[in-house]
Length: 313
Image (cartoon, rainbow, N blue to C red; front, top):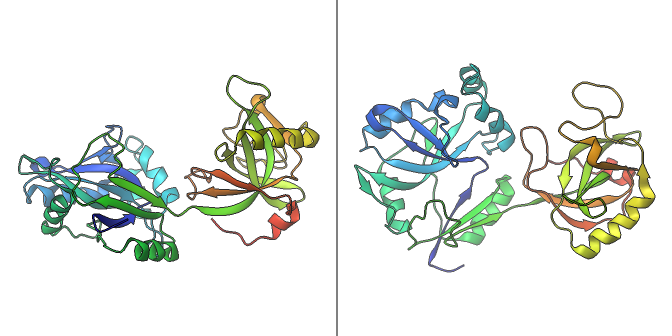
């Protein structure tokens, strides 16, 4: 992208601000919600920040797997336990790390108008390094970082314009996400109409074959389909319609069933025949595909072909 850009790893976690006024850590989510109680393992960061002039940090809460790769599915359960009494147990079994990548204020001085490079220099000068918090590196070679993150199984790369100010609450063109989207073949087990319509395709319900014409539910996919493709798919799905779900029962039940969170009243079920390639950004804590999009139809593949494919996330 050019010498005016700097590059960082894109972390698969939850965006948060951290501050430590009077030695008490406060973690604030993107929506303004207080996440502090859900992450007791980070409490000591408050004391550290108080000793550094009460900086306000922008960063990401992440949970690492055994290989040190952030996994959103491991983090998701941590976001709903602040009042449940389970925060301490989860902190011990699935500890989170705060990855700080920007500095918004320090010692009462607002740094939002400073260029990115200046804010990053100040952040690195703080010397933040702990077992549960870190300041990741920044890089000049975006292509090399993109290759390295792909090989490591990390979500992707962030490109940031060196001279840009910090724009809170704005989707800035000065910060560009370059994610690695994983692509796999899935079998269609049903479809839902667009909201307010009965006969316009809104999304496909897709799953992974588990044998005996059953599918494990992976989620609904509405992105990636043009108008012509939606019309063509509807003609195919009309011939494949069946009265019951081809998905494996969830919540411990046996046989077929309606997937958890799916409203059977708005779904038309399909014989598990049609195969599509879907790109996605991993899975949620419930095992559903994150930000899925249909890449292509696969008339060359069958249910058995997908059953035999190498299993990947």
